[in-house]
Image (cartoon, rainbow, N blue to C red; front, side):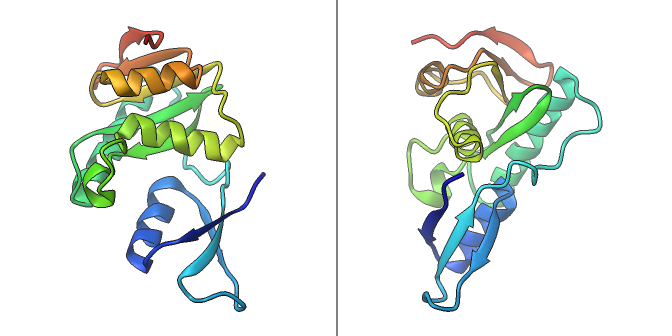
Length: 160
């Protein structure tokens, strides 16, 4: 799996690590703010139950994480084979990135962890119905189906 060099201030690095379950290794030969971040597919805590409602609750936890960090109240996760493989609290405000919606953050995280852009057979759970941008991102990532809300309502396969 590829290793990425990331330059961030310490606060953002801690937030990135906690939110996405990344393992962080610092190296003495690089400046303190340069770290090597390696995705760890096993570091995401899994829900006790592997039901649609449990996954919807997990997306809700991502929403709460987004709010506690000062961002918009949206959260999402990506699930493959009944395992959470991508986490996505909204990061639009904290990163000043209008594309950092929760769904896109979850897709990005899952792709990094799996080392692929193809998320075939994956499911996307989000706290609200995905917008057109997020639905298009899910389409291009080959997400099989999308679910939203606390009741895990089926939004169907993503469409352009």
